[in-house]
Image: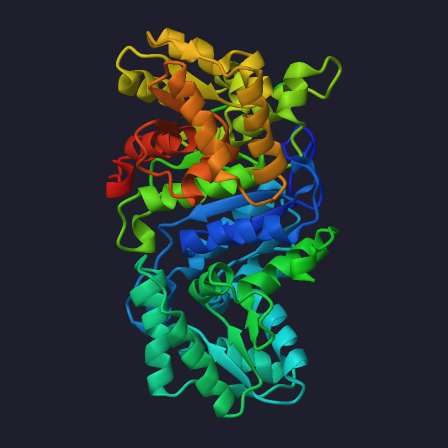
Length: 260
Length: 260
């Protein structure tokens, strides 16, 4: 994390950037991690916001930085390119550009959230914190299953957050994790048809092991949730949905019925 | 168009913004016109790009400026707020931030393209020019039907561009335009189910009047095209698809089979 610039206060009138005629708060989206997750996040955000006209939607500045080094490799493989400084530089850039708060629509990249917070002075709405809080609340003392990438599970991103909110995380066994990996990499990321029976079986097996809810802690699983009719399923707590919810509310807007 | 700042060259190392570790060319997306069109454009762009990993996708900086004043009102209603200076300021901001080219994924806002070009020194890829060119080429001397908003038809945005490329524009009569308006405002913008039989009937009536192809010159119609199985229909030339195609190619990437 060398040579990462610190953010200065955004320029006012006469400064280098001009978000003056934008509606406050302007939300900075640290995107591209990956690009499809950011595209789905923008779509979910629109559908989550009560708006009768274009002008009632949020103003966002989005860094769709697709070429950011791979996050799972950065966590798991020694010597792999480090995405941390890249994500931090983009966060500093968005603050300099004048955004009022930041969101990072990627669960695995949340591993780098503290570096972002150390280099900026505006709030970073955490996809993991808000999802873990919602899941622990809905679980009512029962264990919370965690569906996520190997990198995310290995870094204990969700397990730590669920414990911090007083909950009990339940991690998939090898068989279920292999099925989750197949859904993420072999189907959604590959653009192949999604096997919803396999997804249902993953949830059923975690419920059978004692979980009362399952966190979808990976934006590929958010795509399954969004596009295959799972919205409203009370056993699932979807991370991209929770991030959209907190973003809309923090920006002072009202949530549509489907997202309340 | 008073007090619009002129763009300076983007800052290098040590400057106020930092896109140094981004992959060139960085595409600046003048978004939010409306927000849903931008979200669909980002999605189509991802599906149009040959990429085996996140890192092979384009790097984009997106101004999702939803609160930009209404474009159709700006064109049709005397005294309505003028979106022109707002769009120009955002274009200047994106150039200052260091993007290499601009795209504006909105057909109606193309009315303001010349103001953007006058205030910036980087290329603006035109959704209208590229779509008109593709349509005239495919029409092979036959008339080109124009499906667009009333504001766009009134400003003759597509009619002029089709003529400039040597083609013959064919504008819907009152009945067909009313049906197009209903599809755009009463269905897609309203989030209501889309009547594909009505959309087919619009195309059929224009073909019966002599058109060989129809331009979908409104991003709401691009949503119908994308989400209701019209991709590959040789009678339709979709503007958002054509903008995605030219963006991918100008950025030095390869088009996926579905977008070739």
